[in-house]
Length: 303
View 1: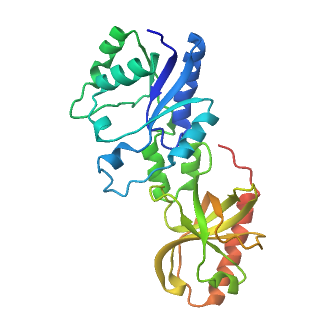
View 2: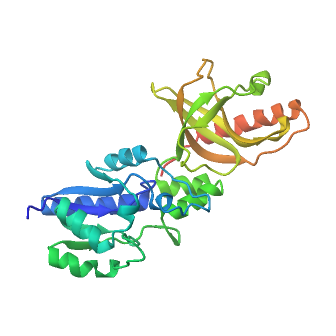
View 3: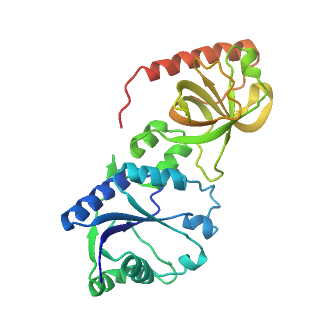
């Protein structure tokens, strides 16, 4: 059998620091063997296919974002498999035999510290070591990467994001969390106060969203233009708005950008959403928020 890659398997949602620790080991193992590193991932998260999203489960990255981040991490060969109920029915040994050995001709398989795949009702993951030996596939185990006392994981990052803790979220990701959306028309109340805002309709319904609040943000369009700014994510109680919206005030922005797609990066949460008794009070607070954000932007941020 012509074996030609060293593989690892996972959803890699977020492609966070823990994932990049695995990818570094994958590249090293592939280089040592003179083979190609390969990441096997899926087009849809198993929890979505299996209907296990009752706890408001959302994703840190879209499929396109994951592929881009994986390639930025030095992995050119990314196998995106279609995940459906038929795929979900495969046991770990079935998957190892049919996909990793049979189709990809893997010589080695790199496993993360908590890596497990295959149908849980047909749980034979504990047997893959025996099968791998029979198939001539070496198993290589990675260790956990920690943030303090906690192993870095997509679950921990989603938790920090849901709490609005952007410092912890971004630290574990290794980059600034972002989401993409289209600029749509809003009530244009911000313009009347001297803080014009762009309302953002988030493009992917499965994309994770930070906790409600006011944030320091950065934004970019597809032409490469960038801005610093601030965002209100949630309701607009001063205007009796009960529906959650994402509206951003981009510092120095004067152009009409309706219909454009923006990438919004969440730098830090600066306060909770508040109701003000007058537009004057809100305007004064927005001026304080802008000053707060500009202080944050003046500081170098490294992950």
